[in-house]
Length: 133
Image (cartoon, rainbow, N blue to C red; front, side, top):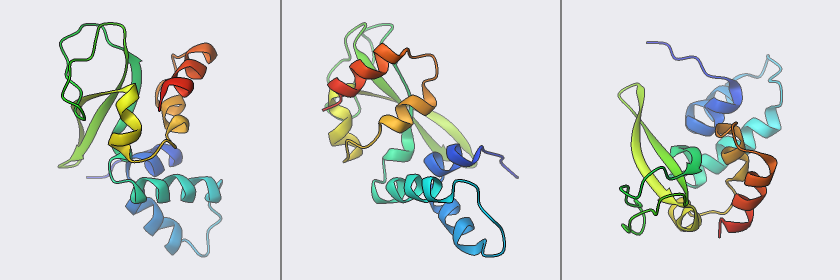
């Protein structure tokens, strides 16, 4: 089966194949190569980072954080997670925004938050950026 991704989405979600492809593309110019490599290398270095999906306010208080196991309060910021298994993405829960740095083992994830959460306003992005640690 062939899966098609935007180049940056592939670097975020499937970093190993992207790095392999970039390394083997000696005769082809890869647009925005440095950004793609940096994003993919970060995903390889921090194994949970490719799981990051959208960022949103919790609609209920039923979900538990995959990091601390505590309930995520209604209207609290949370990051949804996805796993890539058997050739497809599967939803796999949430982490509190304040648990994200420990869960992902890095604070360098705001570019992914912005990329996958296009409905967020500039003010919300700023708020998330301030609360992520």
